[in-house]
Image (cartoon, rainbow, N blue to C red):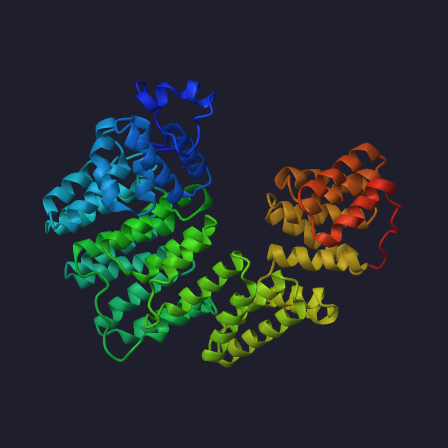
Length: 567
């Protein structure tokens, strides 16, 4: 994260002793972690790698030597906030605001401090200072709404949330928050009206919306409405592990309200914002908002799961495991936490531990399919295809027994494992059935179409399938590679080069695509360019069994392949 809440980390004149001597220290042998500037450099390196724990430590060390350095104050503050060290971030927030009065992160930290202290007026004052534009533009409306609600001002809270109208695509968030607001205020009719608008504005249901709105219906004697909502979620998200977890905790007693205080409402809003911005380009915002939600409402299981997901996405499996360990075994979301823990173990190359955990979960809950589905995916990734097929078979058996609708993705995954384990006819049947369940699904079109061409079967139909997949996903380099390689297999080397060059633009460091382009260049009479691509393929770490064939091509080139037959 190379920016503050105003999108760019400011370059500040007079940064003090530390930065004034930058060039001199850089050129000396003193630039090591034991020196102030060495600590600063180590912090910058850790920050660039998104190792915010280490970055915060190094910046703190440097800040001790130059406590008034604007750059160090900003960087240290931001790292402490991103790591969820709110006490230390609070200590730096006032200094940061003196440097930049519009710093939204500092205002958020001070807002959370006032909410936790029970200072409703102070919290509202902080919320009012949040910017209406920039990176944190969504934060102001929800923060002002719930701090207004803390002051008992329902009309003001409603008006604040209506400010989300300025942003495209946020109708579900706005209506959902309004529903929570009016439910908390004791106005069930207006709450229900907004919840209905939420559902109308939502495409595929997510679990939080489902469970929260069903919670409302159950508390107001509308069990039929709640059941219908859960059934819709199950249809749209067959085999969802969150549904398995959440439904497992259902009892005959009406549930407790989701929001019991304005502080709970703000925590929920921050969690919702973290979910909205949980995308590659804004993942640091998701990290900050998820940690903020948990600061206000510790032990909020869905926020813990989201935070764990963000940390895993940032390649921090150890940190993700630590968050997941905080979810107690008695929690209905313990199952979800264990699935994520197994995924983190796999990221840490502790594959056998992950497999053992998933098999134990499968044995513990013979009616649940999610552990077997994840086990199948793990085994398939490890090229243990026959075992993967067995896991997928078990998952399908359990879903069928539970009356849960078939999932195209499960037939697609099993189809790949069957094809790779040499069971083509069964694979073909699965892939065709996946297309019946999800017509024009680009992944299935690509895999089945390419498999046919590679086998010399159904060539025209296979090529059309891959072309359709590229049309649906023109920026997917791997699907574009399939189209290029299909043309290669058909002997159309000119078209192969065209599509493979496009695939290289999209995924420049993939060894297989570079290897394919090298082959296409060779068959087009461009031997020098072919050898260049093969060398690049070797540089990008191909699978062990692919190294020698590429080296052989560098030595001897290629023989012209026979054109695929069939039709």
